[in-house]
Length: 249
Image (cartoon, rainbow, N blue to C red):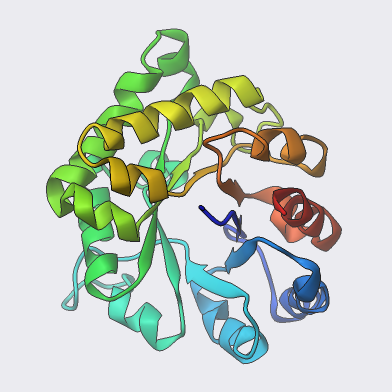
């Protein structure tokens, strides 16, 4: 049975004191949580995660990673470096990386491959824009984003990957895909993987990301193919994030 995962993407937010308060609340509540919980802070705070969370069952990861192992790539961070700081997960292909920083499908696939080589679990983000959804291209876009990665690493390697479906039109907008809309895409992702390997598909965790809140989390997480959430703004508010974690339990 797939264990639900709730992951908090802090984006470019945080500070040492702010982080400490949030992490302290998570530690207090940890024993009552039945889902896996992970946080994704900005790079400078990864060391703080190790210090504060190192003796807990809570996990942490980075928001992106270089597809290169080492070299003259100023400003980039290699997967092995993230391992040095205790990261378990790393995001790959978040819509903001794709749209704001021009990361195409092949670059994202390279990041997934680099993460796997270093022993990290990549969280592969896929999703369509509002224009693509309105044009009826949702499945085509998501399938393309997924297929490029599968072609690069092989379907068997997806057993070590988490997929996050994040409709771009629902990120930070306050608009959320209905549970039925989200389930439809999650089911299509699983079916596409199943066409290549049913066992991998059955174990693949697929998260929903797109304005998840305490008010809608229970219904979203009740869907058959939604295995948790990639949470943005709500992950910065301890009470909200914990309520979402409880909903996943």
